[in-house]
Image (cartoon, rainbow, N blue to C red; front, side, top):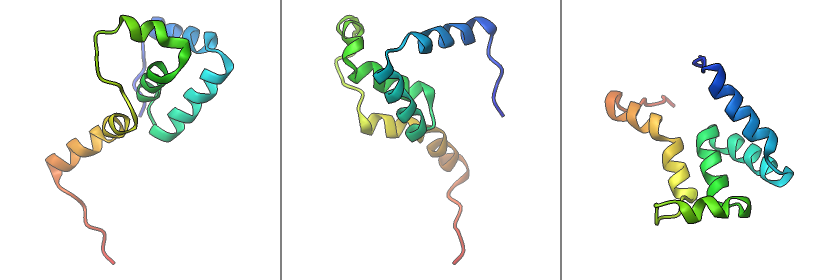
Amino acid sequence: MPTPQPAATTEVVRSWLQALPAFELAALERGVLATKSLTVATRLLVEWSGEFAGLRERASQPERFGIEEAARACSLETTWQTDVWGEVEVGG
């Protein structure tokens, strides 16, 4: 179940989304569909879109956030659950 977010948080996200250029909005949509995560898709968009080059220049992180990092971030909960509970074997 989704966790309700404060109205201010929702408004900031909504405003940011509405201000995105069309290509970035389309890329974000594809990223969310692929990763099932707005946060991971946003990081990929900011990392790789020319629209956000200024943010990258000011960032203190020397590493690029790419597909491998996104895949790890997307599977973080599954990895944690597997570590805690083990894998479920499917009968065949």
